[in-house]
Length: 201
Image (cartoon, rainbow, N blue to C red; front, top):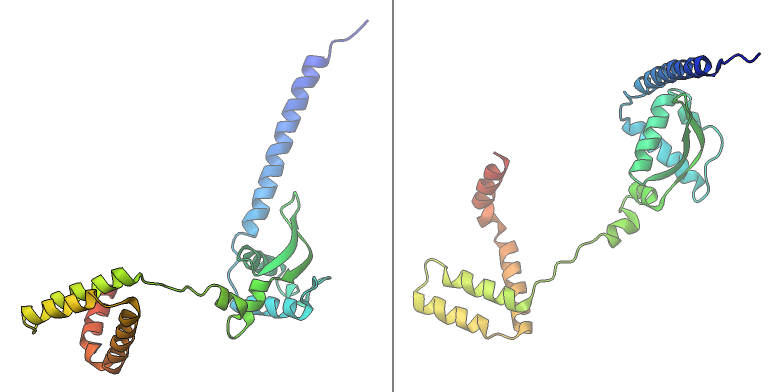
């Protein structure tokens, strides 16, 4: 005689699996919650970067001493540095939510971050602004045409002369104007104060 236990067994298995899944989710969620309140510690960030710098270009192996005081804070800080591209970290999260550390290495960006002059990043990220000579000439001419305290004939004459200047002459004139502006920076202080007050408010 054969007993048909398959349906009951199937229902029991589903119920058991559902309870086990909910229990695991609750335990994992609690684990995540315990690690969710990691605060940024600048001194620890610097300590980690300096330690990894000493091992550069190799990976720092073994358990570092900066992880002894507060492992959760150290892991969170390492993840933070990794997400900013300053370090490469061997971090693996287990099913329980805990982290397994297998070494770390400072990146070129991390090395530049520690450098007093910003390293190569400061050079490579320098933005050069180039102004089109024709557009810049027209900009100067329009400003002259709107200048106060000068007769309309003189404004028109100066604007026309500027529009007819070759590119090299416009470049030289721009340098002279910049030198004059720097020499008379004190005269611009009231305008600068008014602008900053408006921008901040």
